[in-house]
Image (cartoon, rainbow, N blue to C red; front, side):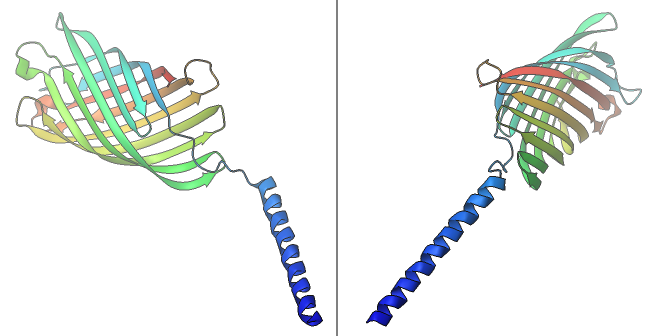
Length: 239
């Protein structure tokens, strides 16, 4: 009986030593482990943008050639983004107008992670609509919608009061005429950089950024083969 009690005492002693060692190991790891290994938290913001836009023909049959400042609005929520812009311009002595609507959804695959962020592979679903008025008949207007897929490379980092992200991507889109049966192909190159300042005492913070977009259209008719370059700044509020 004494031997049995002695064995139980030794067993409890070893269990106690094991528990102390385990707690010590966890505490030691806790001193060197940063719990923020996930990417910065998703954001929602609305912003105003000011972009320079250059819209030029890629063939002699095209009719529209214009450039200027395009103001716009941006709505961003987590992985979904929507942007709309509007501008007017002079064409052959007449005042014309153009509207651009762009939307995308992104699914980011992590490539590497470090405390506060890391590198990601964004997989994109993209869509856009562009209308630019020509002179003369309405059928000569550029009135094209596009939808497609893309991928790129992104890096994000952050802390408690700020988040930063930069991305570059390319997309291949199927294009179609808004008031016709024509179709074609529209490749897109895009890049953006965004910083979120959560410490600013305005709603949930402030969003600042830059966006670049280069898009071309290769339609079945040369009349609608154009190139659009758009880049500019935006500022908005988190909520």
